[in-house]
Length: 151
Image 1 (cartoon, rainbow, N blue to C red):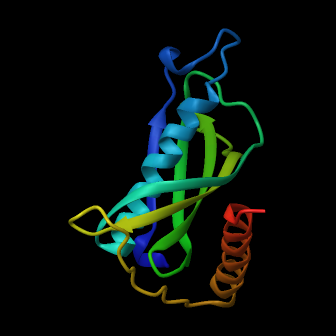
Image 2 (cartoon, rainbow, N blue to C red):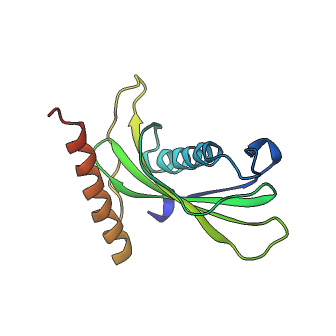
């Protein structure tokens, strides 16, 4: 898990904000998708595409002028897909206390040179916490499979 982690840091500027001065959720989601892409590509060593956003929780507003960090790691892999967990933290640009403002689970699919789903390497689980996250990801993956089946 540790080899595929990725982090992105971004200053939120006025063009990122809505009329209340909070950053648009879509701006946060775009960065979440980008860091998930980096993380999944590192793990698969192939191009990847976003298959789904399973869950996104916005926990607190982000304001213009704050520095936002996006930290991602692969938590589960299947045959061709991976789940990436992204945690988002914000803090004043001048420094200070960082607070968690969002988190998301994104499913990415690896692609071969012809654009077809391609196998990904297994995930090397190094700790009990990583094994727990993998088991949780496996349950979410099964939920995704069940929701796609015709009734």
